Length: 317
Ligand code: NAP
Ligand code: GLV
Image (tube, rainbow, N blue to C red; front, side, top):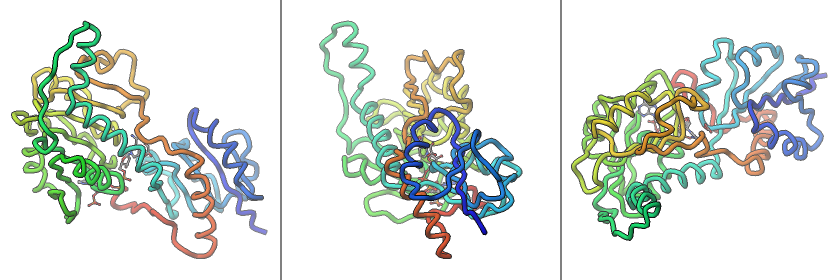
C-alpha cells in the first residue's frame, strides 16, 4: 500500500523552527525528516523543501509533488536532476506582508534621510534635513507579482509616484506600468528609488549592473538614485553597486540578498557608508502561518486538484 509519506528537507537553522511545528500539525501523516530520518525512500510521495541538496529529490522513486517553503524556486530549478513533477512555491499573505513591510521601511528610510539623522545623532547634531513630500518622489518596482504588486499599492497609498516593470503588461489603477525589454529604459529614466522584487532566472541574472544604475533618475527631488534589493542576490553585481555608489549613479543601497550568502566577511559592502546590509531576512515565512497551507496542498493534490501557486518551469518562476 502507498505510504504517501512526506519528506521534510530544510536547509540551515530554519529547520529547528519548522520541524517541531510540522510534527505538531501532521495529524497522523507520516513525516520523514532529512537527513537523519528519511526511512524507505519508496514511501515518500511529497517533499516540503527549502534549498534541499541537489540530487536528493531525484532519489525518491514515488515522489508526486514538490512544495517549496519560499517564494523563490531558483535553488530548485538549478538542480539538473530535479524531477519533472508539479512544483509549488510559497505565495502567502504572511510572506507578502513581511517583504512589503521591509520594502516600505527602506523606501521611507531613504526618503526620510534616516542615515543622515543616525550620523547626526552620533555627533549630537540637531539639524533638520530637507526632504521632499512623497508625491515628489518616483519609486519603481521591478517585478509586479504577488509581492511587487502589493508593495506598489502600499507605496502609492503613501503618496509616492509609483511605477512597475514586469515581463507582461499590467494595468493597475494609480500605478504607471512598463513591461519587457522596450519598457525598461523609460521605467529607469523616471525612477529614483528602485526596488527589486524579481525572481532569479536566466533573464534577470546580473540585471542590476552599472549600466542599469546609470540610467536611473538622479537629479530629482529624492536627492539621488537609491537601490533596494529584497529579491535574489544573483540579480545584482556587487562590484557594480560599489562602483555606482562611488561615482554617484547610486546615492545609497539597501541589500537583503547577495550573490554569495552569507555575505563574505571581506566584502566591502559590509562597511560601505552608503550601504545597509540585512542577512536575507526580508521575508522569512512564519511556520505557524504556512504549515497548515503545506498540508492543505497535499490534501488538494490527493483529491486530484492542481496545486496552488504552481511554478511554470519554462518561465523559471
Ligand atoms: P511572482 O509573483 O512570481 O512575481 C514575479 C514578478 O517578476 C512578475 O511580475 C513577473 O512578471 C516579473 N518578472 C519575471 N521575470 C521578468 C523579466 N525577465 N522581466 C521583467 N519582469 C519579470 O514572485 P513574488 O512572489 O512576488 O516574489 C518575487 C521574488 O522575491 C521571489 O522570486 C524571490 O526570489 C524573492 N523573495 C525574496 C524574499 C527575501 O527574503 N529576500 C522573500 C520572498 C521572496 P509577470 O507578472 O509579467 O509574469
Ligand atoms: C525567500 O527568500 C523566499 O524566496 O521566500
